[in-house]
Length: 229
Image (tube, rainbow, N blue to C red; front, side, top):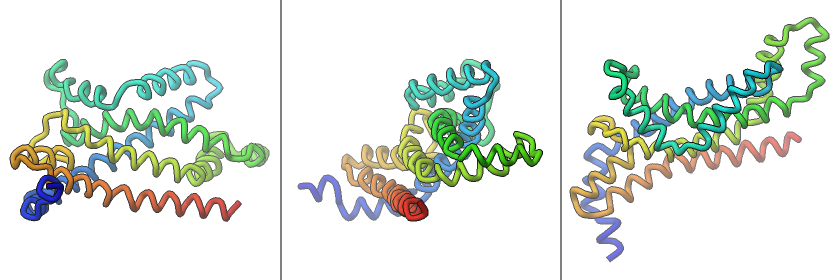
């Protein structure tokens, strides 16, 4: 019974040959674009949180607390409805641009705190030494602090990438066309049309193909950092 409901061989073959590869690529595109956009936002927010200018700190704190408190699916819905509220508004490369902006803004709020912790973990003596040599603050931050900070926070950032991969399954709320389906939407539609859960199970295994290598990479990097200490 389990095999008939979840692992029918004919439906496995149908799933693999009728668009699974395109859905897998779309999932990777959505995740990678949102991660890069979120990393850029998170870096700016982290620097604002550490700024001596109080309004910068306040703005960054409000942004971080807001987007960490609002579910990602609500943000996706809001971005998807923006063209309705503002006729003529279109994100570049839609629907990819919409997903990158929405998920990137949410993940950026989480990454900001991780990056801030990484910056604070860099020994202050190195910054003071750079300043004593006449290096401007912006230059020392760009050439000395940030490279070391990102080396420290690479494992938690990789964990954020894993979470973002799973959050990409929420993209279905945008009402995508078939060509833009990600894994969950593709598997669910095929399961509904066949009255069987096998396509959804196959889509789930595809998420493992993405996340398991990243998980092993995180463990390897963490063990390498422990040995370096």
